[in-house]
Length: 352
Length: 263
Image (cartoon, rainbow over all chains, first blue to last red; front, side, top):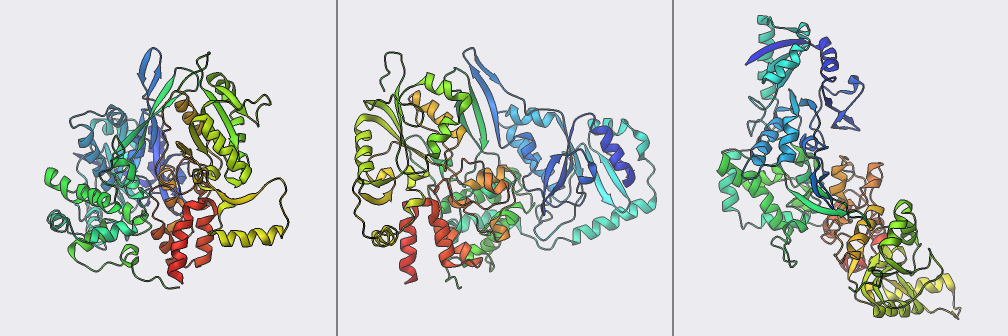
């Protein structure tokens, strides 16, 4: 793999050139959080952004889109969400999330809506610095070796740029004079120091290796009922998770006419209707059972199948759940640690 | 369902006590209005036409809650005439703002406070209740008012003999789709988690907390929402008022229970 160097002053000129090739999505501020967006003004780009509210999968499969347009003549697949895109500023954990989704969508049934969008999108990764919610080092997703076209490591006044694909290389060849192939020893040392310091910056960790067994051993633990008592069943943990991928389909027929649409929207196993079947039966009516399923998938089932959790340590569930049900508190509780969380307090008397 | 001689279902749209916002919303579907009247035989729709016939119906859409004996009779009559009854809007589904009072005694006290001892000649008022307090309701279409998209797709399904297909999840789901930061996490009292989706999280998109106007979602965890707001320092009565505003009788049982716990 080739590694080159880009002076920070040359970043915007580079983005300017590549944005002529495709829609450029970048991390920007939304109040005190971040989101991926297409912008006209590159100064809006947040180079030191934390996790975006929604993971990058929103760019491949929008929360709600039309799968088929139906008419008397039959149906026609709608791929209007598939356009040429470049996604800049994707953190390593989110690239790992995309790799997990790639595997999933390439399994028995090929999901062309995802795969077509993925094929038409270039991933330009960007290094990041952990905040209090990040635990990507625990899942070993703080580093990335595949799944990107270019990867930018953000150092003092320059980026080290990893070229991960021939398409990434093509982007550089649009204006190679912006890049500097000659790396100085000093640059390399800067990178080594940065890496050591970054690896030490993770404030907490979780022992993923212990969790599959603990999920099994504590499958009937009262913990799940306690979590279920507090869970608002809002589905936010699933919506913000970079590896969740469930969806539901609804028919939208046009009034009077014979045309219609078949809409596909994000669904979540943490929502009640998800497990409802014909006849109105529901296999997971209780919130505790739904949470158990979600955590079994993230912390146990995926590990036994693929040798790694389907949690990439991005910290979105921690930043999002209003009642503190997240991989950190659930993981800690499984391990038997004391947890400071709303769900752990809920059944105690609330004082004024 | 039988169709009339033109192959259309006979439909009636009725308004009980409410702001008539749902009927107005149907009229406000200007682009689709001709299609609505073409697709079905609209027998009765007081806001839209004067030649209303109160005969047998395939589908009755009923807006508003029941607040008088007369409305009660009217509703029972609609039920008798219609094969399918759909409650439209939060008032019909849950009782609406006018159903916030918790028990009958409290309602009588309030009624007396407002109207004094006067005898009502033409109407006999009763405590506001959703239509399912008196009749069996086949489908519900909540919203305050109902949404255009939601109404058109539901109407379309119903005239084809299909049940409505609505979002059964809370506002939070749409709110996340719109990539809003959670207001509860900023200690703003938002009812998104206990309120039915369909509005497109319009208030939160504008940084205003959800007031619950689409009524409670089936799977609402009221206890957790209540305790969460308490922990964030909100006053007992403030939360009670906020939660009761739009949920009508849907929240009365829950709040009644809390009242019991308080004492």
